[in-house]
Image (cartoon, rainbow, N blue to C red; front, side):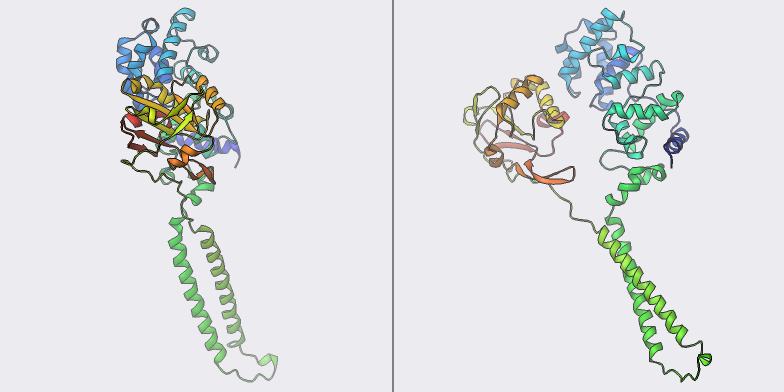
Length: 450
């Protein structure tokens, strides 16, 4: 199958089964759309649609938003991921629109990306939706789906996906194709458990071809087991038949011409059937051996429980200050363990806690991050993202082992010893109040507060 054939089939499928597709963000004009799309970064459209009505009511124009403070806008959008940065960017974007573009939304990608908080994806959405230009916005859904179904090959970045997609998709349907891929990724080809049995693209999908069988091994074990039993029974029956035939006396044969057709050919027939069944049995057993599901690996998990006394700790932070648990008695401690500075998930967690830090501080919370990185690494990480709380350098793993968050983990198919992402909330008396083991990196502060 050629690349163009794959594109043709998939696009025809979407045209027939989806037809007109539009953004699920609510907006009334280009200004509202650019605000909504900016807020939707690493956040659901549903959450954005719940947040924007009041914001749009009070700040309906670029001029009004430009005159607001970022702290004020923060209160409108605090339920959205990264509200602190987004509030600053929205105000900055509004000011640039007023000062540089006469309060009008630019109609080309090059000018759009100059606006604070507007990346290439957002710019492509605006250019596509508002100005109907053939630009392909690659968000997490488009990136995942296009790689899975084979529209893109070895695309490592959104830009690589974008360039491959617009090469094969006709210009006139690029705006629709963008929404087709988003909706397919949002409701069918979901990230963790794609609904392959409900999808009409399996005949042309590379993921289904290579991965679906591996992901569903256990579903075929029972049928194969039944086949194995049936083959064994049939083989036993044929062998018994063969034994009876061989046990019969064979008449003397005077010459080769007098050989009857009822003896040797029948034995050959049985032997042939037996050989065929043996081969079938071997094949089935080999298939079963390959498809027996291995026990699912489970990451190590702390044995500490809510109500336990929190282990005492002390370590230096990014400023060289010695932080001790004893000195923090009387405050609620958020002690979160993370794998490594300046990696995507760890950055998202830190920024989530940073954005809610003012609220946490006012409510007697102290936030402490812990990893095996040294003070220098912590200082660089904290400076880059303006982190207002301490990051403890646990280079000898003492704190991690005390809280039992160091152990075997699996990542990208590899099993190794490492830090298990875990957060402990410790009350004013030094007792564990709650433990978060399934950390939502982008919304971790909300997990703690809830």
